Image 1 (cartoon, rainbow, N blue to C red):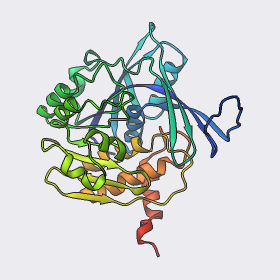
Image 2: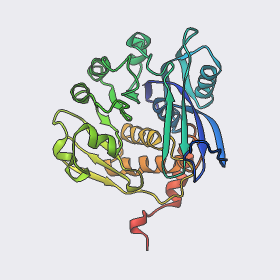
Image 3: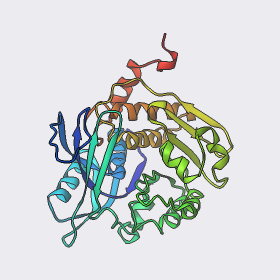
Length: 317
């Protein structure tokens, strides 16, 4: 089991997942759906659960309300092997919730913020970072309380020899906060946006033109491309392609977050760039075969998945 401790700082909410092929609601119509789950949500928490499933010692820093959803989130973190001792319970607030409507290939999200934006630097104990090897967060645009502080926190982490990573998520305001993100990227080892997020943030026309738009002061950028796989843009200008796996997805909720977990784990284990993408893509693909994102990835499950899928679709006859 890996010995390196990982700190994840982020939002906590539940996911209410409705899944079926014809999932889009229509005014004045009632539709029946095939699947429903109440699941642990949030990009940060799903990545934390994925890392714990891959054998890492993971501590989570967050805040929830003193309500049923908050209790559920804390219980699920512990069940999935994540240390939840640094999750604050605040009786004056309500835990956030996301309604996810998934048709297998994609999903639509409606989010009630609740405590999602309420993580602040005061919740992050210095001693927790001193004991860690890596720090990660997700949902940059939802974490309003931390957004002005990430660059300074990552700077301190890097100066203390920790590696750093984050996932950005969609900006509901579509402003993209480019100046602040550029400052943060200077202290980031691995940035993991989706393709559409990357194109919006760096104002690139398409993936082929993305490299020319990336800031020079940055670490690696791993772009998640869904059914097209992934692409890793390295600081020296090289681009490594990661081909996708052929699966029939049941629910794509959390697939990108489990990709994050796989990529972080692979890099901490010293794998090559190409193998890191291969492992991360496997984690993301495996996640789509179950409803919900948290708890869908384990070390044994990923290794079995890789053994069963030796070739990529493009290589198969």
